[in-house]
Image 1 (cartoon, helix red, strand yellow):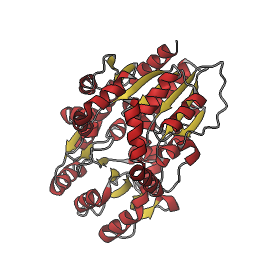
Image 2 (cartoon, rainbow, N blue to C red):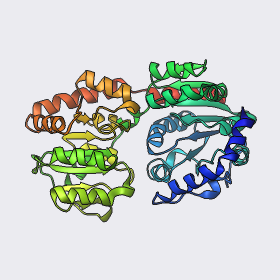
Image 3 (tube, helix red, strand yellow):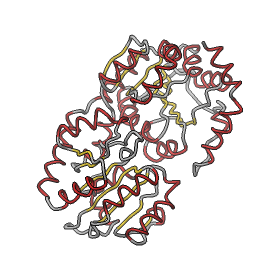
Image 4 (cartoon, helix red, strand yellow):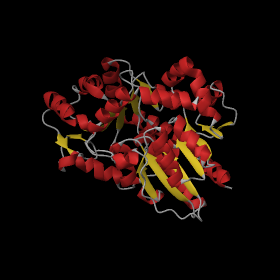
Length: 414
């Protein structure tokens, strides 16, 4: 299988090489292309164990942080090489997790030569892959250097599971190279077993652990950024993706001119378009990147949304109003904030279902439904408190996964 895979990579290079280059060009920060080709300049102590943790982008870095924190606490001698694929993931790791790794690198493109060079330079004792990022050459060469390979905080979305059925033999080859598959939920465990995995355990979702850690001054600070008094209602709109979602949310917000809003797009590269839409509906917004304050603040910076939720009386979480899979609703729940989200929450399926059952979140399928729920919550402080309390209780009840994952990694080192 490995030979067929690499022949196909070579033959299809005229397609994927321009695509990789084009996607990188869209980012504000260019990746380190030497590292993307496996050329790592690392100073590793070969007398100490090495863990290579791979987190694709922002979401996976956030999920990895509490595990790396536990790993450093339980086994301080370990050396952690953290790899990311995107520049946003790199930025998030530098800003929020710099104390949790020894080296931060860009993940190599899954070409045999690149992966061979990278794995022999790192020569990890354990490879810990966060969530879903499985590459055949990476796993193949990890086993060549005798690393233990773990899928950590593993999840398989509805879309990925459907797609995998058409090339099931490929996924069977991938999971054969995993020593342990440590999954978030029983649903995820069942799906990876359907790929042929045998050593599967359910340890929970690390994002419940990361969400609970916050700056106690965050609420006051972020409310000041939108010039809000104690009586003002602050709505934080998190991780909207694209024109369709932005227009969906803005249409619902238009009747609530007195509220204060912090609006964080999922991709800050498209902030200018969001600013134009906000200006059309509400007047010129303030921009965080320019250190501006105002009633409507566009959060066009990296890594600040999680703490900005502390200021919210109501959270609107994007990614689910259009069929995009949804975004993280755990962060606002951890602050005791009621959550409104769309119906397309496949990437956070289990969390969304738990939150809706608990009465901590509400699904809004139309602009009218979103406006109705906003109206109810804005006018009913007791309803806001009740939803928020249920959300915080749900987060607290599901903590502890990061400690279990760190223990599994330490066991693999022994």
